[in-house]
Length: 99
Image (cartoon, rainbow, N blue to C red; front, side, top):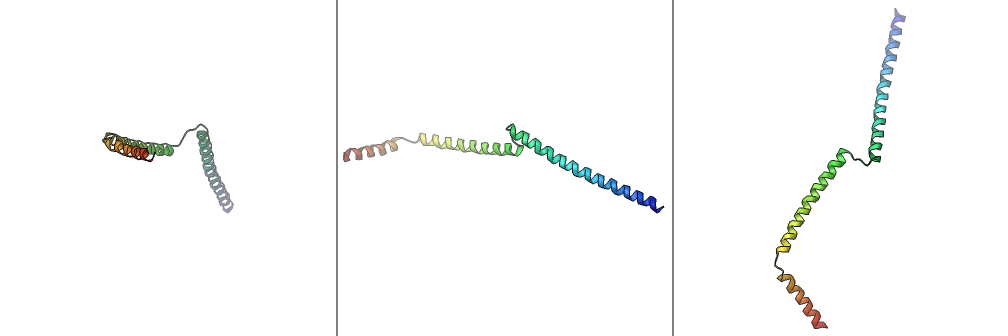
């Protein structure tokens, strides 16, 4: 009876080891496949979802900043130009005096 238990124990140990190796091999295959896929996507110029989302966020911020700058520019352009002209005339007057 004891020899029969020894055979079953050896068989159980063998199956357990084989399953452990299969799991490790499965993980290695997954890692290798992901690595190949990443390299393929980079070679084709494609980006990950995270990179795309980050780019979209930066674009949105830039668009908001541009619209704020446009509003500020419109306000500046609507201001009376007399102030600008008077400053220019003072400069030209002082330039004419020194000549």
